[in-house]
Amino acid sequence: MDKSLKSLNQKGFSLIEVLIAITLFAFFVTAFLTSQGYNVSDSELSEQQLELQQLCERKINELFLNPPKFQNILGTLKETKTFEEKELSNFEYTLEIKKLTIPDFGQLFGQKGSVNQEGKSAYQGNYYNQNSGGSRNANLEKLVFEELKKNIEKIVWQAKVTVTNKETKYSYTLATWLTNTNEKVQINVGL
Image (cartoon, rainbow, N blue to C red; front, side):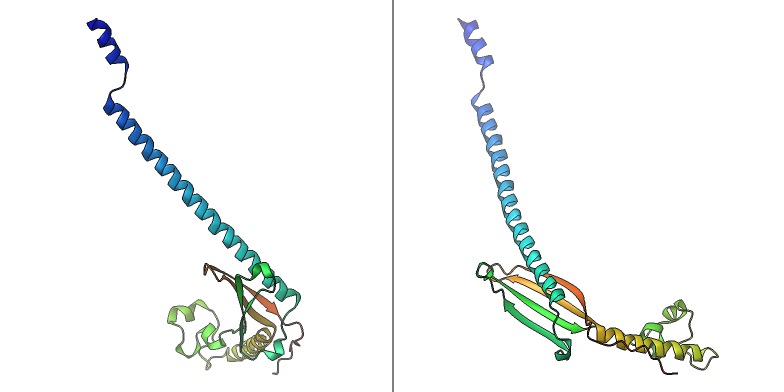
């Protein structure tokens, strides 16, 4: 009889082994459920970001199809509105349109001490020393640049749309360039 009892004890699990197995199982189940919870949360955030992005793209496309009247914008136009659709009442958008600004000629080519010596030597032109023989070319290039700058600043506008969910305060921003097709380009450079 002793032999049969010994053989039964050797085939079964002890209480400690069972407790260790249950603890490991509980740990892995807890880790799995926690990671699934984060996946659901990340999926909801991704879905909301996608919806915000689509609304931004929609507003940008509306700007391309129906551009604003650029003559009425003196500096920067910034307005915040809500969407007209009832199902989008939780969202608002901010539209910002401003003129493109290009740095002046001296800043670009190192005049007036605005750039260090390395910046001046990187460009082969002689824009920062008007006493040299090449000043006629430098002056002509400066006139052409200034005229080009005026034309670009009249024609190209910066537009930025930010859509915000009013409940969660998440937002998404897209920016683009708009062209003013009503503006005339001046190509006459006075010499």
